[in-house]
Picture 1: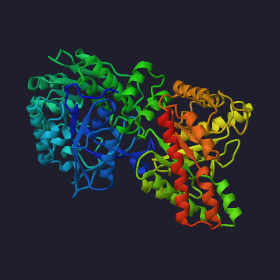
Picture 2: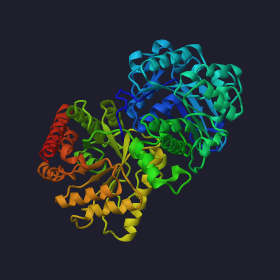
Picture 3: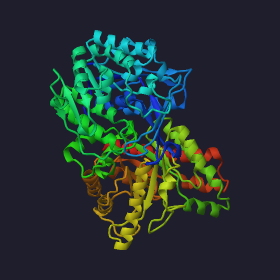
Picture 4: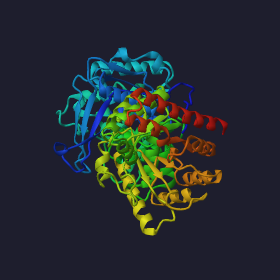
Length: 640
């Protein structure tokens, strides 16, 4: 992905205006009145465009306001994850972050309700426009709805003046929402056009200072004050020398860099893509992101239009707004390979690229203390004559030990279970640890899930930051019936994890059920890749040779170059044996660390459960063992 402004400025574009938290109804084909659950994302035209531009490789920033509460923090955290500059996002201590409720009733009806009365983004003022921030960008993008109120109008005009004074371009997204101009009822958020001479007169005063003007036919009508599209285009041209882009939905777009021709479709036509309409909301913002990626980087208008139409197609075919805008890698994949699906959301190859290039970032190193053991720890408790309920407290001590080793640094984590690890998970969250949670029924072969086989319903309750972990005792030379049954179980889990947006770690142990050679684990992985199972992480037993690791790395490169990596498991091996395994794997960049359990906790667990060791001694013992393994891994990696 390309980074760095072509102008030498820090940013390519700063967008200004609306910022909300969108709550999208998840029941498709339902009235908003009947929606039972919602998906949360960042919304608002300029906010979506800032995210889309960043995903496509531009350096973007946003000027808006959010509330000093959980939704405002969510917006800022998500913007940071997307790579959007936060300098212009003002935290308003007196107002709440805007909310929008939306749903898909059918392919032509998309009800939405704006909760923006005295909310933070609608209070944007001239004082929020910092000249140093604005002049750090090659362009600013203003939006039509933020000209609807005097103070937000003044804020955007101030940004336009600063931009022009410093040689930056001004972009207008007409973004016409009649009810935000007070022309429709509170429940008429879906309404896209109501004629208004007042709005048209207001918009005409903005056009002369713009370098790029983008809108649908209805938006061009309101900007020019006429419902004849050709006449509207010519009116805009008389007022402005800007490049005009007319969005025409499934027909693509038309670009007018100069004189307006005799018919609207005689401009530079950017053809659309044949896509099934799923949800039109947010498509224009995705379109704008794609056009800006070309226009701001000096591409010809035909290329910019192609990228814009492709980005719009992605948004139309998916449910949400900003989360559905493609990344640069995804856009190029689509343009290179195309899709056999008119509903792009059903294209597994494209969806995997989207998922892999938009998921939350992780450190390159991951050192995990695995304490998700159930059967083994129950036996320890029974042997010690201790109630199994004490295991809850022990796992909390183990997390405390991780915290002592991690010291707040990223790259540390834990595997924790739902049976005895619930309170420990709360502790891990406070420490900012990576958390993996097992789903398999302990010891099951063929694979069974714990508690319920309906894993999709279970995963909905899990935090989005938790990684789904599943152990399968899988050998590529297993009988066909055994292999197929286990693989299909993992495929079901993979589909569920993707549906609810949770990362997946697949742990393969082959050595307990057959002979192991340099190809065994790579063949097992290839079996699963052939079924379309592409886990974010693999957890694998140590290998005996560098050749085995080369084969594993090759299997990942050939099937999923976006895989996060491999973690080494311990199998209760002594520290010396693990050290040899670490040394063999450390030279492979795809191996990111380890997830080891019993080697670290067995001594402390047995003594603590027999009350031969107190809490502090148990924590110190586990911390020392975990630190020793971390030192061995780090040393092996440095040597490699």
